[in-house]
Length: 61
Length: 139
Image (tube, rainbow over all chains, first blue to last red; front, top):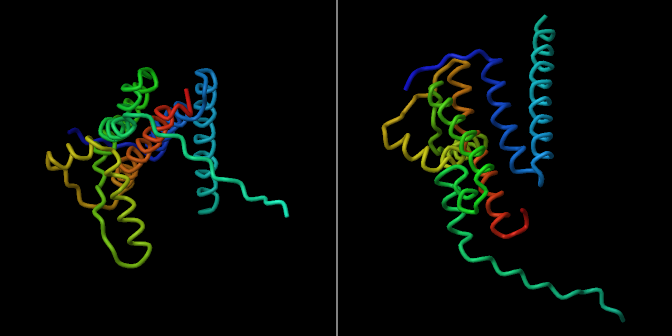
């Protein structure tokens, strides 16, 4: 099994992607709603990732 | 005196085969959906959980072993073990093929450990969804 080195950002975006797909698939009742919810979850994940990243950077000075 | 006590409604009988759906959904991510003829959704669940688990392995994440001690240790290690175990056949195959990664410092290993647990937890969500479809509470 090859070893993989990812940055924080890449790993967190992949985590967000797979989690959003599953949350979208299991949550809503129509395909359009599932797609919309999955995209929204992904956007929230990435927004939280960037926001928390900036908070930590600013907090460290 | 009027009584406000209402009789409990008898629970609807579970449809035949729900246990098979849950067992297959645990063993193979998305397997419950395949059994219930929801192939598109099953394929998405299958791909997401498997890719997450494989990425966890490639990042050399550690598998949790159940440990007891103080409350936090018990919750983290037993909960992490259950999360790993929820990946079903992926977890069993990885252990059977000798995957044993010690817990090491470093963000890549740490993400790998979280990916392995999260793959199991996403599979739990898929199992619950398959169960609800089997009960016809959901389309």
